[in-house]
Image (cartoon, rainbow, N blue to C red):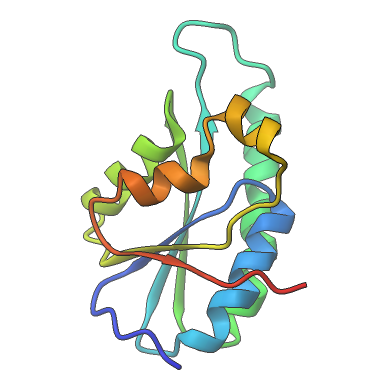
Length: 142
């Protein structure tokens, strides 16, 4: 089943495993006519010192993008990557989608127990509830 978005599909990826899992779930649904923008959001502390040096964050993002590229490029889709910075991950994702004219956001929900979800603000639920454009929740493949 191909996705029939005319514009880019924005794919947020939190870490390398998340990037690869999402790319593998999305790949069978897209083709050469699609553009996929894989983004990694570096959450800023709103005045607090950064937890990691900028170069370490860039290297981490490069690993995220590398793991996403393989499955996506096999489809013939155009793959673009970008590091985003923001104090709120979900807001940064939707701002980027709006700025780049994305037609939708696609992701695979990350595993986590309810306590972790409550403490982290449950990004998955916020992505769906704060959606400003279509959000495609891809099935989790074991």
